[in-house]
Image 1 (cartoon, one colour):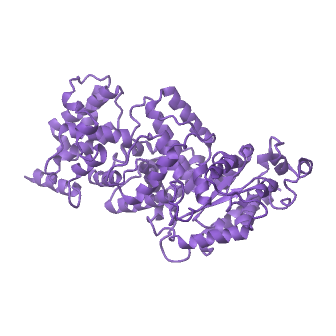
Image 2: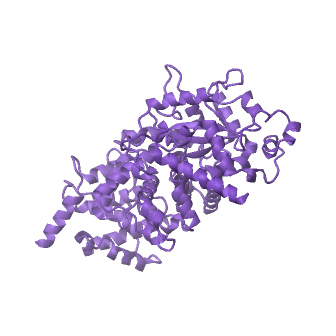
Length: 585
């Protein structure tokens, strides 16, 4: 009787709140409107006649015996036997070798049969169908022998971490800590590993309701950012142990981390999710019915962007890992690892530069009216090229300083006498030209171009725009801003000015020339006025932990120039760089 009471108490804790059982909602999210296994996936488990004879069958059996052993339901012999049979069936149907972690993904679906809140418990076929659908959409990593899709996911994780938290990214890089050392259980099991069952069920409730497979990457960054103090203070020898211990331990922590991940999601260019879905999570994933409205808007943008997310010359091929040969997947991984930059597609750059026309519906690649961040386009082309034509809000930017700005771009002969910046702009780039960048000068040039208020503003997302011939400079400048100055929200326009121009012209947008070009201050004033109409950062989605610092508390934000924390940090960075420069001199 005591065991039954404990089991009943466990079931009450894990049962979903509100009307409708968890199993019904999960079936609806994964299998479609009717939630029937026959609609999407054949009832392969009940008709499966295979044998328990996988090469690593002993590993499967051992994993089943220790899966959720603290829960009475999973200690029942028939449940363990059913789990072993389902895992073996999946491996034989997929023609894939069993990998540890599959048992952790299957366990929550099997537990649906034990929840008393369910009027009609799901059948074995429905459990197996939901399990298969969940793997296809939310964890498509197990059917690759070398975990190539998972490695691609790690590349996107590093990129997202560098975009929002370059300080944490750089620290892990300097200490030789790679995502596979601590992220693998998070990605493979969608945080089910080492997470209490009741929290796993609540997390997956949210995940399936939201209907965005890519969201787990944002949650992973939020988990890491939430532990920033422990990570930053840790000794190098203790860092791997600290990272592997991170996870979800309470309902309150789940609420905070989910809000933080929502904030990251809302403040990330749609290009990122589009490329992640296209190259890792497969573009054919559909959004379930009843999904949260807040995520639906962005997902629709991702679907529209995904058609070109991998066709741009500066990004990657459109190979969908689940449908490609191993060699193609490896090539895709190599391309992703070679990028080294956070790219934004031309469509999204144009969408931030041109508001919707009157009486015209907003395009999928245009930001919503209450977008909580603004894209600042820094045009690094020569002055002559900039004056000949540029995007309306673009700001000219010379990372080498403004001393020779008036002379730049006046001819090849003049460029030959004015240093490496001019040589670079005229296609006569010396081999070491990007190396001439100096952090103090770049920071001063950034303040001169945007003003210190905008440099310190967390709502400002800086996009570097150059010609296709400026690749070496853009990479060097990107590394300078993210690695040395550790500035957040830095990206590069994919395909360069040429691709952005071509897309803007196809949409019928005008390009600004020198005769009609407003001043830099006028452009920033316009952006400031737009910013004032947007909600304050940190008050939508609660991205406190993931974005670092307290953005939802009292006091002024960096956007007003009154954030003492960011002002002191940048001043400290500037003093450090200036001191280093003096020592070097």
